[in-house]
Image 1 (cartoon, rainbow, N blue to C red):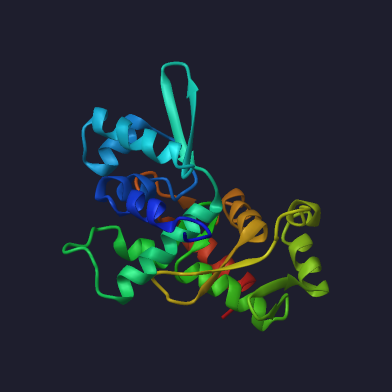
Image 2: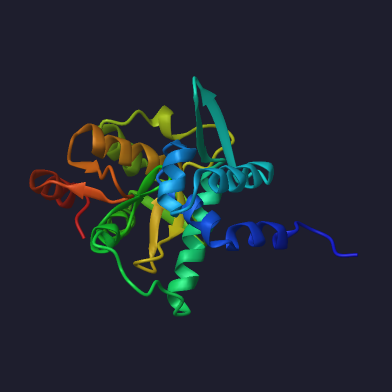
Length: 226
């Protein structure tokens, strides 16, 4: 008898193309209706509902009913990180889509991964903070330094929002398009939220792309120089 988690069950669920598209559509952290997921996965509404039920039963997603609508979202950041890792593996081993979409370059430049910034700009954020010793790295662990605490405060983020008991505040996540780490965890989430609040960038309404405006990109490069 084998021991440990049964990865075959989760892998089989994610491996279905329609369910993979549903999960990918939820990677921006927002809750979507089953109708919206059906459109994203290019499947019928009854089929989408069946797939959603299977994913929820397995604990990969959660749902909430409000009025006549049922809203669905990923059950946690770990699901998004797993999907990001699978995208990296698929890209590295040559399993790519036959046709690329018009938003692919924008997604590689900057995108949201559940609740934090990914893509080239996400990698830039982490590498800049490491180079300036705002973060220290020991093996796979990231720690906010004393200078980092000051930076976060000056950036307009309360340190109490970052350091939550029981949750690692600084996590590196391997980026599928850059093949380098970007910043995840609570720190990555609050910095990304601050970027949006300051209107340096906005989230694309039809994809996971994060679109920087000219002023915002200049300010981002000044705050997180390469």
